Length: 99
Image (cartoon, rainbow, N blue to C red; front, side, top):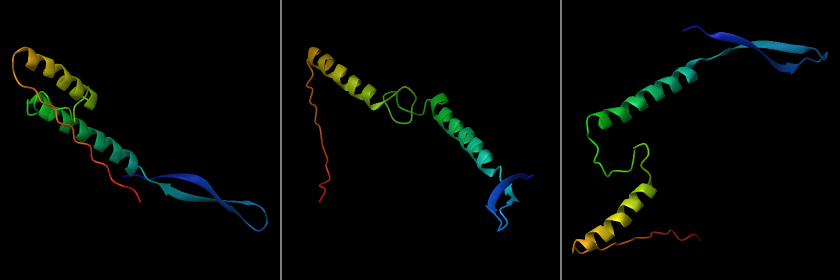
């Protein structure tokens, strides 16, 4: 891998002149981010294309938020009641006490 060098002003000398020092600028962060995006997109596409995720799973999916999940639950309750089924919703709120 080739390193590119760029001039960077480090400090001024005692005489007031600029000291320009050359230091390497790495391309690894750019390569790392590109590789991360490539792997991430493949990891998201594989379960979707092979139907490995349940239809109602909201996590790790595009266009599926917690709001979508709540709306689905709120829409299913009247449908269950209309068909004569029993519907029960249990909510659990967990809080950490701060001292």
